[in-house]
Image (cartoon, rainbow, N blue to C red; front, side):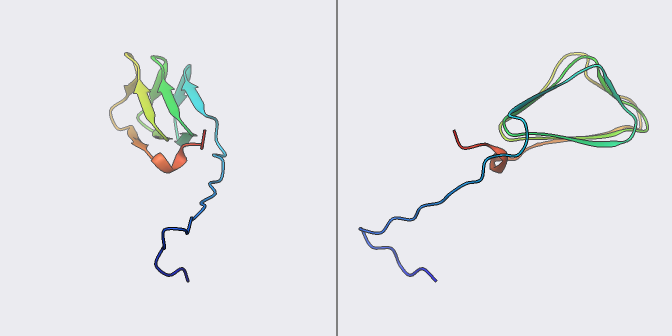
Length: 91
């Protein structure tokens, strides 16, 4: 167990590189089932990305998620997106 820090002590934290692509672009896709897309930095869902009534799409990125004009979720479809700063790779 680490006690109180003195002026001369330094803690080194090593991070693990992100195991996913840094950037991800989604297009020409119709989601008809449950799917998760993950990127270390950013995800862009293009105008040809559609979540159907039977689909469930989850987007998870470290910094940014962009939904371009024309991105669609049909009635009954489910869509969830979130930014997770822990996903970011150490640069």
